[in-house]
Length: 286
Image (tube, rainbow, N blue to C red; front, side, top):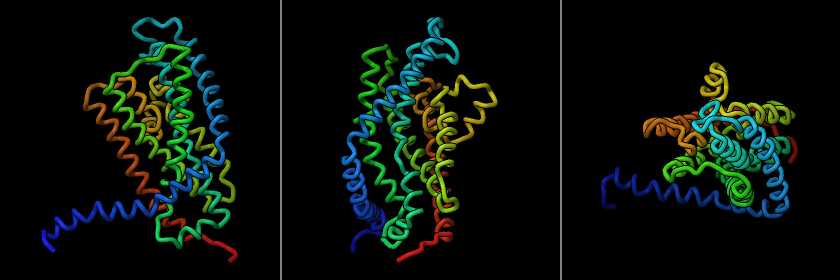
């Protein structure tokens, strides 16, 4: 075989990754097929998202109605606070990947044992299975809701570079949401009911991610606490980039680097806890 060992390794790595990825594509396809069986759920999700966004948007627009042209509290104008709250709702839709529900349910039923005997990684399986959910929610729910509000009220128009930065940051936020939901679902290994855990997680994430109240409007100590948690990278960070609320290239790069760091850290934590959880796994029956 020609070439140095280093060259052989480098040339073979993409091939191995492609082969491994091909092993997981059926799970993504299966997730899409299962999703299409409940197409009416997209209508319900869209109505719920639009109603939630309307309540939040009209409330905050009333607060900023008399703000000066330069911006009101937190430096927001009526258009930017509207765009922030609307896009926060859309990001929340993308983060609703159902991973926490499905992981906990498979642990309870013992179905996770079947996955463990397959030559695939269960967390990676769950990631590929949730991709159709994220894509479908973005296209069938997020885009219509954004289009509806764009027709009835003025929104801030971001610069093309800010849109690009937002798309990268939004992709990282989806990874963060997957990891947070995966960790939440794994609590099924230690408790017989994860409903309470999931409700607490949902409330904590919504608050500290900036979905309910932009972090710029929070008191100093509370904002510092939110900045020290990974949830900021799920909503506030992508929207800060979208609205141009950053100071130059270095600041934008720092926002993305922080998201990447949290993705890496939560991935490592998930791997460690997953191995520990497997030692506790007990499946009865045949």
